[in-house]
Image (cartoon, rainbow, N blue to C red; front, side):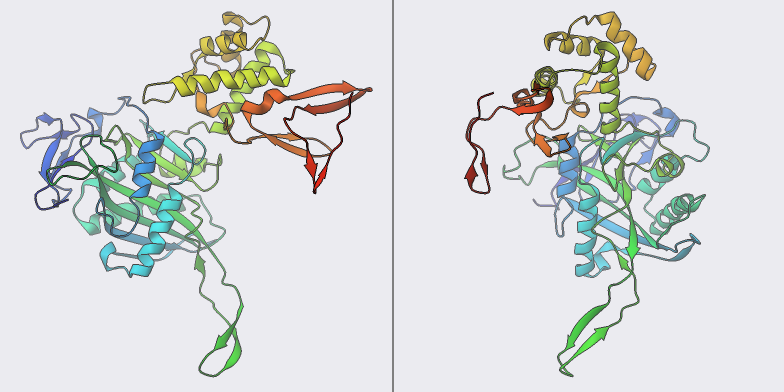
Length: 441
């Protein structure tokens, strides 16, 4: 693509910008290599409280794949590293520099870290969060200012304020490094096949962003090394701590993106481990609203079903419920992920053969469990991965893994007064090269 002749749209939500005469505009068209400071952001009060569509998996995947060196669709401008001492939780050192001046080997390590940070499933490791509307010291304002400023020193100082919030009422068990970058990535204004040839006249959306990664350190390992010059084996003593860039503790990407537009009212929080978001970081540092994890959502669904129909089901019924949910997900045509209200749950349970299920009972169960009869469950969160062996059946003898789609081939039976697990198979079972005899019960 010819960057000199290209055109870029800086795309945030409509009416998020004002022109020089303070009139709202839908978008701004500017040269591809222009500064991101060439626009004016309207006051947050103009857009707080507006509800926009949520970020979807393919948009996160698009952002993540840009994080590699020399990618023409990604520009990283500056990087700020802050070193925090354990126990004392004080800033020991910080440095800010243009990313282009960082050694290439370091750039590769950073890119790998950022990619790792953005990996994972939505509502498990990645959480799109709304900002608190009435926070006393809203981080949204700091991030806005950092997003729009063209002054590197101002951006650095704003990020250091965020670091101060990280240190408030928090003691770190290990030395920790907080890394911030700011840059922008591009997307074509028209959806097209990734393999399609780019035109010199392609128009692109430019998305300015701020990314933060929090990484702990670990002590260096004592090693034995061979000295080629002296021709002898030596004990290698290293005292410098190792920054664990391959395993970020947590971080964030701001702003969130939906339908090729940046949603400045939301932020993508990235947890270090699945279903373990740091609530203190979310609420106190980011001043965002806590989100329900997929694991918690599944627990809510289970409690609702138990409230309606009890806690004992045969495997075929459970499998049928999962098939009903999977069918809803597969046939859903809208960009927004499908959700289940009490009417949907009632239909699924009835279709799966559960007896004595009424809309009123399910509605009351929603009210009892989540204190909201209009609560909607995200369909993808309440079902294990449908085609993989995501269900674990733990027994005293063995642990068996089975996929939701194959759960119907499993039964619990009573054989000679003992509970047994019966698994239907299509072929002989082979153990360590030996074929099992088939017994007739």
